[in-house]
Image (spheres, rainbow, N blue to C red):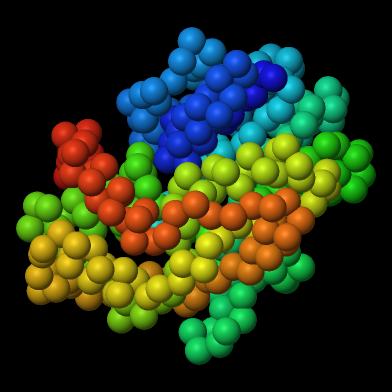
Length: 321
Ligand SMILES: NC(=O)c1ccc[n+]([C@@H]2O[C@H](COP(=O)([O-])OP(=O)(O)OC[C@H]3O[C@@H](n4cnc5c(N)ncnc54)[C@H](O)[C@@H]3O)[C@@H](O)[C@H]2O)c1
C-alpha cells in the first residue's frame, strides 16, 4: 500500500508513521507536511527505506492536486492544533483545518481514494463537571473555541462528501493524547520540562477541568483498526477512560519526578475553557475489537523518561514560548 500521511512531522502523525512502518514494513509511507513551528523532522527517527518526506501545504489546491493522486489511502493529521493560538488568531486554523481538508476531499472524490480524517472529541463541546455523561458517536456537535469549530467544520465536510459522493471515508474523534514528540506548548511536556528546570508550572483557573488522556500509541492502534476493519462512512470515538483533573495530573507528574507541588501557579482561566471531556469508546471496542495497550501509569512513566532523555531537543522550544 502507498499511505500518504499529512502532518507526519507533528506529534501524533510522527508516532503514527513510526507505528505503521513497524507493523507494515513493506508499505510505502509518504509524509506530507508544511513544517509549521509544531513540526520537527527529528520526530521521524526510526523510519526505514520505505519512508519519504515531501514539504507541502494542504491548503494549496494546486499542490494537493499534484501530490495526492496515487495514494491507496490518505490519513489526514495535518492541522493547526493549539487552542490558545486559535484564540489569538484563527486564520491559519481555517486555512489548514477547513480549506486543506476540502482540497483533500476533492482529490479523494475524483480518484475514489480511501480517506481517514483525524478529528478530536473537542467538536462535541464541554460536559458538566459533575456528571457521568460521556461523548458518543451520536452526541450533538457543539464546538466552543475557534480550533474545535474548524475541526467540526472539517468533519461535516467529510460527512457531506460521503453522503453526496459516497467517497470511501471514515472519521475518528479522539480524546487528549500524550506521549513522545509532543510540542512543549502542550500541558504534559510543558509540565515535565518546566518541572525539570525548576520553573513555575502555570495552570488555568482552578485546575479542576477534566481531560480524558490516551497514550499516543493506543490512538495509533485504534486508527489502524479503523483503516483495516472500519465501515466506510462511519465515525469512531477513541479514548481509554483516562479521565482526570488537570491539577491531579500535574501533581502526579511532580510526584513521579520528585518535585514539590509549590511549583504550581494558578493563572487566569482560558476564555471559554471547556470543563470536561469524556469518551465512550464502546463502538470501536465492540465492532472493531480495539483495546488500549497502556495504563496511564505505564504511559506517563514512558513519557517522562522520553522528555528527560531527549531534553536537548525540547528545552529550546520551552524557552521560545
Ligand atoms: N493532540 C491531541 O491531543 C489530539 C487529540 C485528538 C485529535 N487531534 C488531532 O490530531 C491531529 C494531529 O495533532 P497533533 O497534536 O499531532 O498536532 P501537531 O500540531 O503536533 O502537528 C500538526 C502537524 O501538521 C502540520 N501542518 C499544519 N498545517 C498544515 C498544512 N496546511 N499542510 C500540511 N501540514 C500541516 C504541522 O507542520 C505539524 O507537523 C490534528 O488534526 C488534531 O486536531 C489531536
